[in-house]
Amino acid sequence: MTRIIAGRAGGRRLRTPAGSGTRPTSERVREALFSALAARGALAGARVLDLYAGSGALGLEAASRGAAAVTLVESDRRVCTLVTGNARDLGLAQARVVASTVESYLRTGGTAYDVVLLDPPYAVREDALAAVLQALVVGGWVADGAHVVVERSSRSPEPAWPAGLVAETLRTYGETALWYATTA
Image (cartoon, rainbow, N blue to C red; front, side):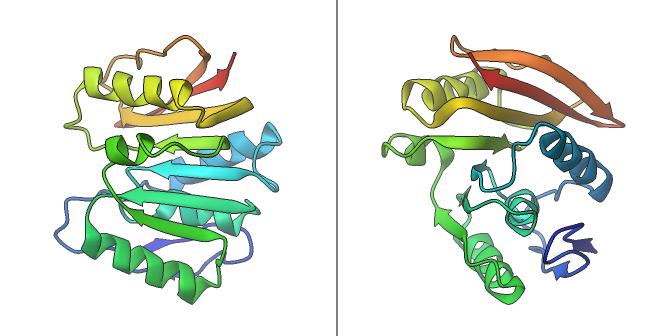
């Protein structure tokens, strides 16, 4: 069972896609992630971009905890329909789900976000992740003082942070690693 941990939708269940290959971020990791962002004052009223949204657990948690606007980008249209329904059922109107690959979405040109969450499938190669991080910076997707968090396997190397993003810290939780960076 996946549920929203805290905020105005705290304790409510999320429907998750069966057999889609998504792996919702565990409650323990989400609690640690959002506690760290809250300690930095990064969530209240923030614009949040959730790339590789999967079940939507990260983006919907951000919306529940006070983010002003959340964009969730997921390539599987069936999963997008499910996440859109979850957002509606939870009353999180500030959450918008976009059916697109991350790479295509980042080519559209966009608005700067205060928090960017990336939870790519473990099979995504390091060079592909580096290209996405570069596109975030070059495309103007990160605001001044933005926080960028990459979730990967704890066996993965540190992401190749492009100029404009400064590595801040690494936290591991069993098989999961959270890499934090901020804009330079």
